[in-house]
Amino acid sequence: MKKLESSLTNMVLVLTLVAVIMGGAFVNHLTEGPISEQKAKALADGIKTVMVSDNITVAEPVEVKQNIDGKEAIFTIYQVKDAQGQDLGAAVESTTGGFGGDLKVLVGFDPEGKILGYTLLEHSETPGLGAKADKWFQKGEKGDIIGKDPKEPLVVSKDGGQVDAITASTITSRAFLKAVNNAYNAYKVTPAVTADAESGATQQVKDNEEKVEE
Image (cartoon, rainbow, N blue to C red):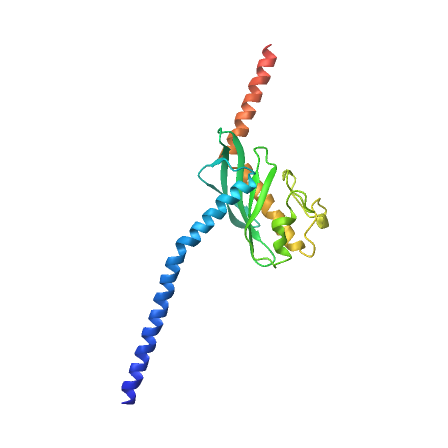
């Protein structure tokens, strides 16, 4: 009799465990859609924010792979045009390691490479300290990087640069600026940008030739 009771108990436990697992999988399936939609909306809103424009068209994203500190890093570039089809530059997704984990930044660049704006897509930094990066480097703030050209890498003043680090969050500030610098480097090697640079150089050569002929 004890053996039968034991088997029955085990059976109930197994069935309960299966039901819990299946229920969890079902809940995950139900939430996958809404979560994806929220991320897509956050990205779309983020692109408008960093490009400082609402009326835009965004091309299919392009991925650029680069070797960063001995590891392969992937950057996603969204080329952006205005309603008239004029090139506005691009928004670039860049991820680096912060103090508490990965720090994912979306940075907007104009066609010349100057920073138009930025927003944090994901971070695991300490609330109230590292999380301040979302505001600290915005236009008019203490660490303002808007309008800067990262051709010369952005560096915190503590390391000899010109950007004020977040108070008590130097590590996060370094990680943030590294993400921005990496985003710039990825943007400058995208096919659209290099093609424009080559066509511009070709036009300049033609102009010079015409001047010589004159």
